[in-house]
Image 1 (spheres, helix red, strand yellow):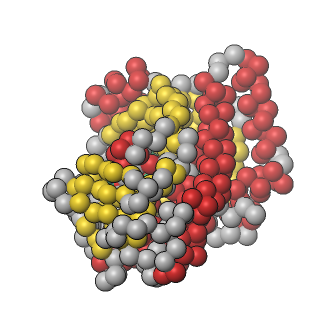
Image 2 (cartoon, rainbow, N blue to C red):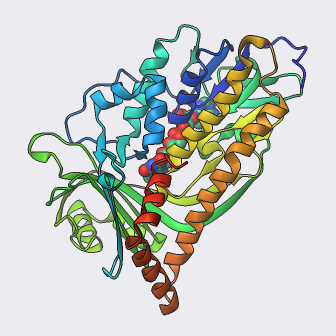
Image 3 (spheres, rainbow, N blue to C red):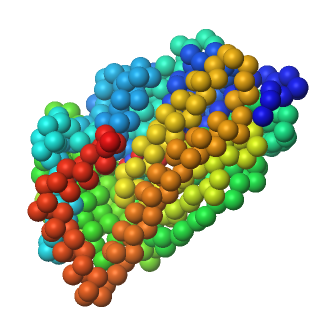
Amino acid sequence: MSAPATKTDHDVVIVGAGPIGAAMALALRDTGLRIALLDSQPLLENPQPLAGADFDPRVSAITPGSQALFEALGVWSAMQQSRVSPYTHMHVREADGTANINFCAADIHATALGHIVENRVIVAAMHEQLRQQPRLDCLMPASVVALDNSPDAAVLTLQSGRQLSARLVIAADGAQSPVRHLAGFNTREWDYEHEAIVCSVRTEKHHQQCARQIFMDQGVLAFLPLAAQGDEAGHWCSIVWSVMPTTAQPLMTMDDKDFCKALSLASEHWLGEVTQSSKRFSFSLRQRHALEYVNNRVVLIGDAAHSIHPLAGQGANLGLADVQALSGELALIGSTGRDPADPILLARYQRRRKPHNMSMMLLMEGFKRLYAGQPLPIRWFRNTGMRAVEHSPLIKNQLIRAAMGTHV
Ligand SMILES: Cc1cc2nc3c(=O)[nH]c(=O)nc-3n(C[C@H](O)[C@H](O)[C@H](O)COP(=O)(O)OP(=O)(O)OC[C@H]3O[C@@H](n4cnc5c(N)ncnc54)[C@H](O)[C@@H]3O)c2cc1C
C-alpha cells in the first residue's frame, strides 16, 4: 500500500491506554512516527509505594518475558517500588488430592517464576512514563464513538465531536473493544458458562511466595500471592474462583464471614482458614478471538484481539507479546514515510501472533473440557497425566519455560 494522499493528523493512533495500549505507545516513542494515545479514562496519578491491604482486584501474573519488556520500556523499577510480589513456586492440584504438579524456580536456576502485579500498578507506572514523552500526544480522557476506516485514512470521532485522522489505528481497547465493533471485525466466541469471582483474601497460613491452583469438577480456584507489609506480610492472596453461575450467585451475595468459610472449604484449607475478604467482583467467562487481526487501517492487539480464560494467567502476557511483534514491525518504518498500514507489514504481525494466541486458547479449551468431565475414564486420564508430568523433570522444565515466556 502506498502512502495515502490524504494528510493525516497522526501516523498511528492507539485507542486504549490499559496495560497493552500504554506499552504500545511507549514501545513506539522513539520510532519517529507521529503517535497519539487516547483512553476514555484520565491518566493515572504517579505510582506510589503501596502498603495497606487495599489491593486492586485485577492482577496479572507477569512472566520474566513480559518483565523484560517492562524493563526495556523503563517502567519495571517504578512497579517494583510501588508493589510487586515474586512467586518462586507454583502448585497445581486436583481437588481430592489425587494428583498434583509442583514447579520451582530453583529447578531451572531462576530466582522467580514470575511476579504478581496489580493492574493499577502496571498502568500507573506506564502512565507516569507517558507523561514524560513530549512527542506523544496523550488525549485522555477521550472516548471513541465512531470510525471511518477508509483506504486513504482512518478517521476517529470522539465523544466531544472532535475528529482525528490516522494512517493506522491500533485498537487496544479491551475485551469489549468498541473499535473492533466499529471496524466490523468478526470474532469466534466460546462461552464457558462459568463466572469468575475475584477479590483479595487474608489467609491464616503464609503463602510462601507460591501461586496455587486447585482443579475441581465444578471449576478452578487460584490463590496468587500478594505483597503485604509488617504482620500481614505473606498472608494476602488475590483469588480467581471460576464456578457455574448457579454457584456464583450465592457466593456473591453471602456475607464476608460465610464467603470466607466457603472459600476455606473449597481450598481444602490449603492455606488454613480464610479470615478476611475484600469486596468481591464477578464477571462471565468468555473466550473470544478475532478471526483476523487486521482490517484495512485498523489492527487489533491485546484483549481486543483475544480474551482468554484467566486460569492461564496469560492474558496480559499474550497482549505484551503482541506489542513486541507489532512495534518491531513498525520500528522498521520509522520516519521513512512508508505507510504504517502497509498490508505486508500488518500481515506479518498477524502471522507472528495469531497461531501462538490461538494455540494458547485451544489449550485452555482443552483444560476446560478435561475438567468439566466427571466420568471415571476422564478423571483417570487427567490424574495420570498430571502425575506423569510431575515425575518427568524434562517435560516439567519445558512447561515452566513456556509459562515463563522464556521458551526458545
Ligand atoms: C479476573 C482477571 C484475572 C486476570 N488474571 C491475569 C493474569 O494472572 N495474568 C495475565 O497475564 N492476565 C490476566 N488477566 C487478563 C488481563 O487483565 C488482560 O489481558 C489485560 O488487562 C488486557 O489489557 P488490555 O490493555 O488489552 O485491555 P484493558 O485492560 O481492558 O484496557 C482497555 C482500555 O481501553 C479503554 N477504552 C475502552 N473503550 C474505549 C473507547 N471507546 N474509547 C477510548 N478508550 C476506551 C479502557 O478505558 C481501558 O483503559 C486477567 C483478567 C481478569 C479479568
